[in-house]
Amino acid sequence: QVQLQESGPGLVKPSQTLSLTCTVSGGSISSNNSYWSWIRQPAGKALEWIGRIYISGSTNYNPSLKSRVNISLDTAKNQFFLNLTSVTAADTAIYYCARERRFCEGDCYAVGIDWGQGNLVSVSS
Amino acid sequence: DIVLTQSPDSLAASLGERATINCKSSHSVLYSSNNKNYLAWYQQKPGQPPKLLIYWASTRDSGVPDRFSGSGSGTDFTLTISSLQAEDVAVYYCQQYYRTQTFGQGTKVEIK
Image (cartoon, rainbow over all chains, first blue to last red; front, side, top):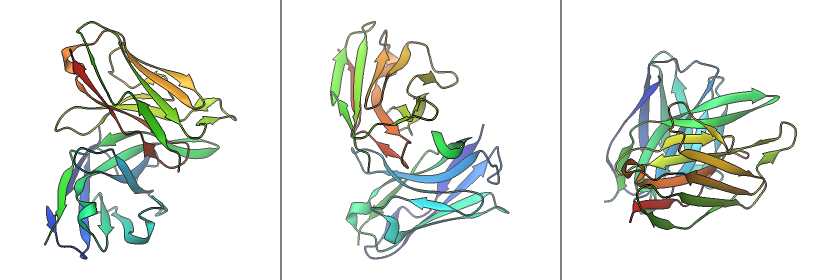
């Protein structure tokens, strides 16, 4: 069973860049049956998918965040990363890293999500 | 974006009672070439990440009790807990993966 663990600062100043790391254990980030994703949840609110990366390096982002988001990975360290630039208080949330199960039948889709425990990030001066 | 709207926002039922949650999609999530509905359900208990319960609208994930069932097709879906247990107190989310990923706003389930 793959396990995911987020790490990074719990407090970021407005206008700065939020950077988080997800360490994957119990499986390889190079697996072709997985997408690696970030999802966030503001307190008391619904889940918002931020984006994903596949081992090929291809990425998909939520259109509402695309201009500020970059997701990358490091196969040697079995880690992937989130950078979110120009943050405001609206970016305060629990940030989850996740594995989306990749399913291919013609096209490929993410079917089902396995989640890390989450990392609370507050944006405040 | 595909918008998912859940109803009700919260519900309270007695132990052993049936609980039903609805999810309506702004766009069909039925992929005609394989006749699969690209919709999942998650359970989130307080202080925990969500847990996958059901995918393809009606397929239970490994280890999920059979009191949880999913149904529906196209734009209208339902999650049913056939006999509510104390450990089922949680917020439940539907999610579509037909076009990237979006989630419903959540339904809070409590014991009456």
